[in-house]
Each structure stands twice: as C-alpha cells, then as structure tokens.
Length: 431
Image 1 (cartoon, helix red, strand yellow):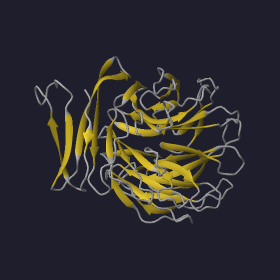
Image 2: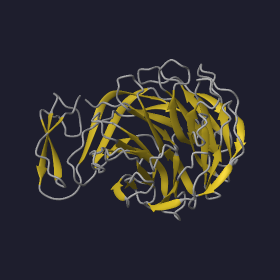
Image 3: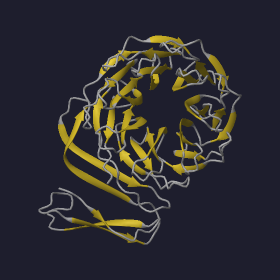
Image 4: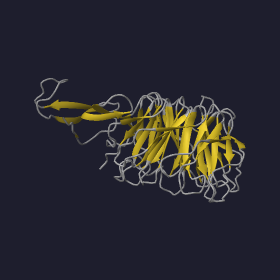
C-alpha cells in the first residue's frame, strides 16, 4: 500500500489536516483499495506533521531480526519557508559495537565504494563496514583502540595512498592510529598522547609540509592538542593551545583567507561554555590565541561550509541543551557575525553539511540523541535555512556523516546510534 501526499497553497504556520478517502474497511485497519490522501490547509498556527507508514521490506541487519516493516516518520517544524520535501528513505540498520559514538566514511578496500568506520565507546574498538556499492553493507569487522573512543577521522598518515584512521580515546587520553592496508583491513593501533579526555579529532596540514597532521580537542584540559605528522604514519609529541571550557568538537578551515588552515572548537560538553573558539593558524604548525564567538547552550559539534554563497567559510554549531543549530556567517577575515539559531531535535549531538536536494546550496543534517532522529535543514543559499524535517534513525542518534552509499550521485546519511549498537543508513530519495 502506498500513501501519496498531494496539495498546494501551503500557508506558513498553518495547521494541516490529512483527510482519508476511499473504500476503507477501517480507518486504522487495511484498505480494500489504494486511498487518496488529500492535504488541505486550515487556518490557525502551529507546525505541520505527517506520518507515512511504508510497506513491508525494511531489513534490520544490526541484530537478530530479519525482514520487517519499515516506518518512516517525518515531521516538519514550524517557521517560514514552506514545507520542505521528503528526501530520505526509512532507515536500515547495520550492527556496530556497544555505544557507537562516531562514524566516518572512506574507501578502505580501494574498490571505489564508500565504506564506514564506527567507533564504539563501551567496546573500545572501531567497526569497519565495507560497502557493497548498492546502499547495503557487509557485516562489521572490529579493531581494538583505546578506552572509550568517541571520535574518528580518516586520512593518509603514511603517504602510501591508502586511507588510515585516527581515533580519539576519551578515557585513555590518547589518539590511536590505525594504518590501512588498502584491502579493507587495518594494522594494529599505535597510540600517541593527547590531553585529558580527548573528545574530537580532525586532520589537516598545519605546517604546510604536505604531511597530514592532527588536532585533538580535550575536554579535561580545555585545550586542543596539535600533533604534527612525520609523513610515515608517526607523529611528533603534542603541543597544546587553549580553548573554552569542555571542548567537544574541532574542525578546520581557512577562516581568514590567507591559505593557512585554522581551527574552530565547539565548547560545551557540559553546560558551562556556550561558545566557539577560533584559532587562526600561522602556517608553521602553530596557532594564535583563541577568540570566542557565542553559540547556543552546550555546543557539541561544529562543521564548516559556505551557507550564503559568498565564497567565505561559515560555521554551523549543534547545541545539545538548546536543541538548536547556530549559524555563524564568516566575514572572510577570521571573524564571524553573531549567531542565528534554528530549531533541531532534543540533545543535538552532531552536525554535518551537504547538498541533500541537489540544488547546489549547502544544507545541514543534525543527529539528535534524545529524539532518536536526524533533523534535515535545507539551505536557501543566502545564509538562512528552511525549518527542520526530522527523519527517524536508531535509538540514541549520536553522530551523522554523509556519502553516496549506492552510487546514484545523491548524498546519503549514516547515523551512529549510541543506545542501539548500530548504524542507520538513510538513502537519499530526492528527485
């Protein structure tokens, strides 16, 4: 049975009623023939909500279950910009370890199909899920890392053209380096010291020697550790730079347009800092002292993109305690404008940028831990965003990344679910 939504003349902030017509044996039972769903606007205020039950065929490959029914629940938030289209299919889950906290993508076995790496906090390992190229994934293979890994990034640390992994381990105060063999397998970890309570790791060439380096945010010290790469898979001892209190996430970009990579750090694992620290790079592996810009309550994730199409990098910050994402437009000189907030879900933990609807305007996806879903905010291309649309994921949706899992040229999503020990794949169904 298929439900189709049709309608026109949507009114911003109106209440929408869904009316079922057709030969129905019961409103809550089965239909004798396919009904039509007419969506009509009525006067009033509030958000519009639609819940669409799909047919059977959802496969949960993360546990003991087999075939079952897949339900896609989509909720549009209140606000301006009309009703965004439905872009993603119902989630299909694949098993990971216990308490998966972070996920990243790369081609681990050199078959030109994007694979996944998921770090599992309670399992103290990283799960490798090789892609079949059609939107499905093979069963996980695990590799040991440090204690309570919470963040993973990919890069070529050894310069052999094969992607490697770096994992931030919160309880062991270090970073695990797993060199890739290029066939989907990885060598045993080698650990390098970071600060107290590493929460996030990102890569970049901080000293312009064409060798990838690392930056690690440490919530126990209120700083970021810089580990310069030697180009052979090893790293130099860390050098620390101050951030705000309890830094939770770090990303890189060129905020002042000088061709030297800079850092942005979201501070807010605990509800003390409500800001983002900007550290401008000198291009020799060192950084200037931080400058802070306000965000929402409890910033936990930061990503960069050009939200208004002016060629200057902007920031998006997920705020767990205010259930929002803060947009900070960049001025191109290393400074940022005051934040503008957009509603997301409950306990937003991760934000990812991409073009979900193929209009060449940057959009956002936000993983919401207490809502068990992902909020998708489509960009208008002028620095503003449409109201969120929520897509169901697993229990405790904690981290989100993007990639083309089925080779159709559309950006799909992968969500690490901290409380259901799996990763949800949401394929992009946009036209």
